[in-house]
Length: 278
Image (cartoon, rainbow, N blue to C red; front, top):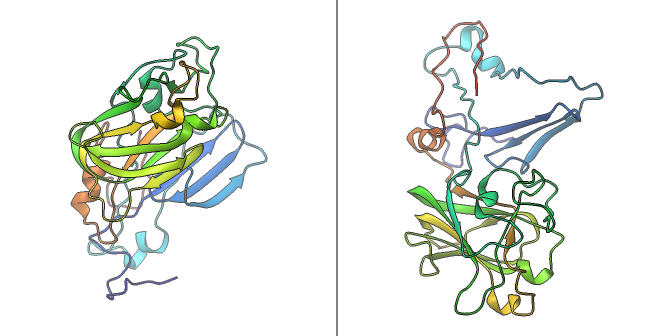
C-alpha cells in the first residue's frame, strides 16, 4: 500500500475525507463493506454470519491506532461522520416522465428500491413489488424520457442505472444520459449506454463538463419503433454522483454530506463510545 500521493502528500491528510459504505442484512447475515459512495460497488469485505441476529441495532466504527493513546492529539486525530445515502443526488428528488405504462410511475425510479430488478407488468401501481418505472414507446417526435431536478447545480461524474433484465432488449439499447440546466437533449451529453440492462455505473465521457441541476435519461426511438406501443423506457433506479478528484478539500466533502438531517454533532474527544442516530 502506498502511504503518500505522488507529490509526497500523506494519504491521510487533514484536508481530505475518505468515504466507505457499510451494509448488513439481519435476515441473511450478509455483511459487506466497500470504498467510495456507491453501495454494492468497490466491495472490500464480504462476510456471511452463520448465526445472524434478528435485529442489527449497533455498528462500531473506529480508527484504531490513530484514535487512542499518545498519537491522539488535536493535529492528527481522525474524524468519522455517519450519514445515510451520502453519494446519490437523486433519491426522492422531483422527477417527471414523458408518459406512464403498466403503473410504473416516475417516482419509482428515485425511491431507492429495485427489488429483484424485474418489471411487474401485472402489478397495481401501489403494489409493494412494483418498484420500477416505465414510459410508453412514443415516437420520433416525442421521445421517451425521465427528467430529475436535483434542486442545485452539480458537476456530475457518473450515473448509475438499474435497468430490468426481463424486458425486450430494444428497451435498454443506446440510452442517452444528459446533465444540464434544461432537462432536455440540449444539455451536456454525459454518455450513451449501448446495453443498459442490469446494475451499471456509467461515468461521463472524458472531457464532458456535465454540470447542471437536471439529469435526464432518454430512450432511443429508432430502437423502440419495433416495440408494442405500451413497451417503452423501463428503469428501476436512477442515481447520480458528483465528479470527484484525488485532492477534494473538506468543504467539498461536507457539502456532499449535508443532506437529509445534515451533519451529526461531533462526539466528545474522549475515550468513551457514542451512539449516533442515522
